[in-house]
Image (tube, rainbow, N blue to C red):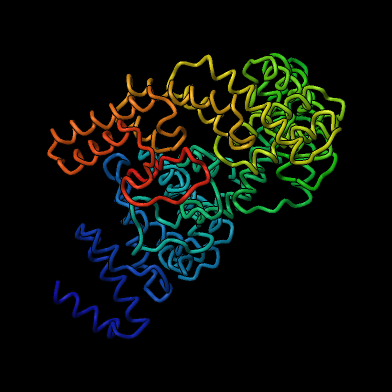
Amino acid sequence: MRPLLQHIQRTFGNPDADDSAVRYAVLRAALAARVGNWPEAVRRCPDSDLDLAPTGVVHTLAVSTLRRLGEDGGRYTDSGTAALAIVLWAHLLDEDDPGDFRALLAGRRGAPVPDELWEDARRHLLGRITDLLHALDVRAGRDALAAWETAWETERAVLAVSLSDAGPDGLIPLGCAARHLVVRGRHHVLLEAYTARHPDPATWTADSPGHRACADALVQALSERGRDLVRAKKWSEALADFSTAARLGHTLGAEDREAVLHAGKNVGRKRPGRDYSPVTRIQGLELAHALLPEDGPLAAELTAELVRQGGEVFGSDPLQSRNRFARALVVSPHDRNARSGLDNHLRGDLRQALDGAQPGEKIRTDAVRGLLRRDPDCAPAREWLRDHYAGQAVAAASGGRTAAARSAVRNMMRYGDGKGLFGEDSVDSVLVDLLREATRSARAESTRAGMERRVDLLSATVGIVGLARGIREERDAAVLGLAEHLEATASPSDVIELFLRDLMRTGVSARFDQTVKTAYLRRAATREAEGDFGGAQRDRACAERIGAGLPDQGLLFGPAPRRRNHHDSGQEALF
């Protein structure tokens, strides 16, 4: 081999020069191929400037690559050899004949090659190579994007194959293959191959790295297929294609806009042999409206269809009906029929709520106020608002938020007859009535939560009207009942915490004092058993003071603030 290489160097010159380097590289590649070293042949052979190499050597190497690809019954799968064959034959059979392949053939033939014979032979060779690569693609299961046939066709057009980058996933970049398929009018083939790779077109977006390379070609392919589908009267499929193209960054042109409008007008409509499909029609109109949001008639048609279907399922499927009316209002915010449909649902919810049943949907205060503005005579709306604000008033008052409770009462009165005074005395009178009514309702509850609620309600009433004798005694009885309930069902600390809320003073009820004393003694025993002797001693001291009557309990553990109330025993100072 060494003498042969030395002879090559003397014949073709130093390989360091550009033209000599190409000639030298092609010769080295041909020699490697001759001894079966195909990886070396692929590595050595350049993929450009082949016109600087001897055409005869290029042709010899090119023929060897085809023979190699045809070995083993056409099951050969080396992508490097395929790339080499494509590059070489695309060079030899180029229309401009940069390597003077025709002259080479004329020299071997001994006579010029006529134009007609040259074109026939060239077409024949192109066809044979295409058929071979196609057969290899079929056997290997390559799709159109990775097909050697696609790389071959692309190389002949734009010289896209790089011998250094040839790999099993494709001989040319994915985007290049996609663009070539579109240029060749094979948009259906491109979309079929791409969908097989990415089955969910909803994920095809221009800003996704996985789709960016093919986005432009996909947009063109989808638009062309969309127009084909419109001509075939496949409206839903056409709109889906245009929507996918829009997600990939496509701006509709005049022809596309016309196709979308035509599809939107006809999607889901009754055709011979096919029933009218409201779901298909709404879905199609939604797609068309998203593509052409500024088109008024299209928006009106979508709104009308949504309202129509909302009315159709008003009783059979209330949730879907609400959704249809709500969506119609989003599309056309001032549509009266859509608003009327939602208002009718709200009226039904209000009636159910007032009857004590569970409404079909959570009722929002703003929605009820809006309904009342549109229909001032809607009695269920007024009644619901009164009940709503009455509940807010009671909750705020029992939580110690008197100002919020009074504000809620004013709202309740406003949605009543709207007459009368809204002064503080009138508001407080109504608030007390609400609290008393809530207290009567809570009286029937024997649970801890019910008893605590009753105490809170009575305490709130006392906070508004003062220590009127009847209310004070009722509150004291409720506190005693809760204390005894906690003694039987809860821990001693729960009883003590109730005592420290200072709801009832020591000396008012002997039963209450005894309950609290017992709680302190029980907790002292527990603390002593746990080794907390200091805590046990303090609990026993509190129990003794309570048992002694505590005429002035404020000084039990330090001075307490002086109060005008002579019953102040200072529970808050116990700890």
